[in-house]
Amino acid sequence: MSPFELSTAADAAAAIHACSGNPAARFIAGGTNLLDLMKEGVMRPAHLVDINTLPLDFIRPGESGGLLLGALARNADTAWHPLVRERYPLLSSAILAGASPQLRNMASNGGNLLQRTRCMYFYDLATPCNKREPGSGCSAIGGLTRQHAILGASRCCIATHPSDMCVALAALDAVVHVQNAGGNRAIPLRELHRLPGEHPEHDTVLEPGDLVTHIALPDAAQFAAHSVYLKLRDRLSYAFALVSVAAALDLDEDGTVREARLALGGVAHKPWRVPAAEDALRGRLPDDDAGARAAEILLEGAAGQGDNDFKIELARRAILRALKVARTGTVTNSGDNTRRQQRSAAPQQRPYPNDRRAP
Image (cartoon, rainbow, N blue to C red; front, side):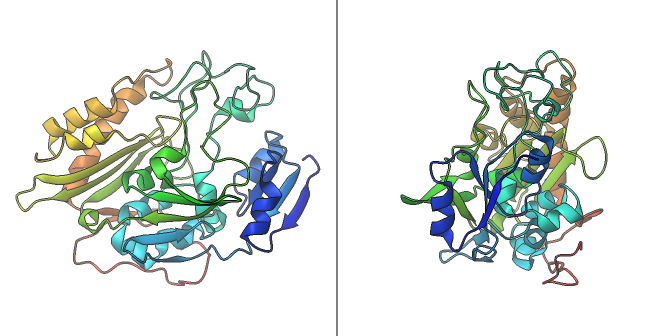
């Protein structure tokens, strides 16, 4: 690893000051992604600012409803929190589908948002990569592309965003709150991450010194009884999604859709959501015909690179499957297993609520 300076922020203002206007400085919380990149030499920050002492590890109801997730709350604590399990089972399932228990115990919510896109060439210093070294070329195009994007890609980059949590947050209309030297601002989750375009080195719209403080979830009680996070991957655990689907339905008494939420993961540089696909489900039964139309809209413009051509059909089938499962009733992920949660079921709590060990 390259030498770097490490400092601990006394407060948010000090942390922001240390990183403002300095692209060589980085905030560090759990470090589950950043430290790997530093060890591989992919990222070489000159200054790390430890923000773990900041009071941002909260999970609490919002003043006007919904739920606030502190940027420093750990992924495991978020997934197993009773309010998340009860009100946002889609988010709980998505988090538990990602990484491993050990990583979820360390990874922070803010860090999960800011993971770098995953691509074997990004990690391989011997190959050109526009994300790592702008203007050097994209080795993935014409290379091995099984894991790569089918939507929103560019001639400069075809990498995919790795987060499962962000796919659920996109479906739930989450808003990311950011603080910097100029004040505070709120960014809808679906606007936080960028498509690669001509500058794939920029994963998000954030600037140096922007500190994520928390994530705000609007009330989503209408979706709690009919949601699922479906993740298709090469192995059951500790693998990135080939395709994932976050599906949430608000059903009328006759089973027709009042409102729907659909987002895809593993297919683009960011969680992929097209509101027109959700509109196509409204007022209809979420059957194969309606699902096929929603899938057609969601996947419009999808294009493979050879090795990943199969992901287009896989995504279409995954959307149909997710809608079918969500229509029947919420399925929650309990780590290694899933269970169907009925509307009257009490939320499952961790045996040790304040313990960050694997549940």
